[in-house]
Image (cartoon, rainbow, N blue to C red; front, side, top):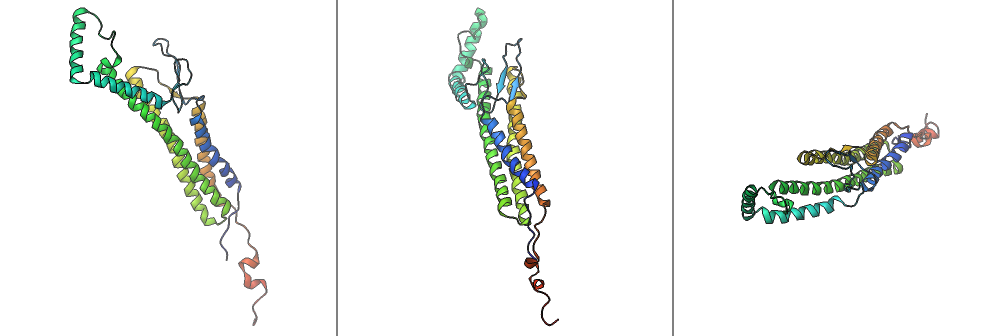
Length: 263
């Protein structure tokens, strides 16, 4: 008896579409700077304009994109280092205390004429922003790398489907698709979680409005994650594809020419 061979079923055809559409959709939304993943509504009482966030960076006060998270990280981290060297030393702390006493005696706010780094709380906030901007830049690379890994695993599974009809090999296809699902959707879920932490932590220290997960980038990525799940399920559905019918001459060569001699 020959080994059971599986045909290309409708599930395999659907999986072939999904496994390429899902990672490519999430990657396209990550690279596109005109679509946003989070949106903060304007707050007129605090003077906050509408703020949009995509994978590459946030919008400015004119609601247009002009800087990446990496650029903002370099600027804020450099300003923090300068402020820390100038005001974070014992000499700087002593100067701060002396100016605080002089400000209390003259009733003149000491913030006037001095940089943000003059205040310890401001330096602490710059340090927090420096850390988060670096982390958001890393999240961008994690998201795109996860989609490339997902695409590689799922494409390898589809190559096996196209080149091998051996039913036993379908187990490898399901395994590769599962690894791709974990890599692709895991990277996207991590991005959503980490950006939510960023909004909560910096919003709690400054009071800026919380940006919810909405926008063309978010919904497009959600659709891509759904396609990845559908592709993984479709490859598992391919395990039940119909077998190829083998001819009698292949399966029973002895019976093809009649009964053996002597009977």
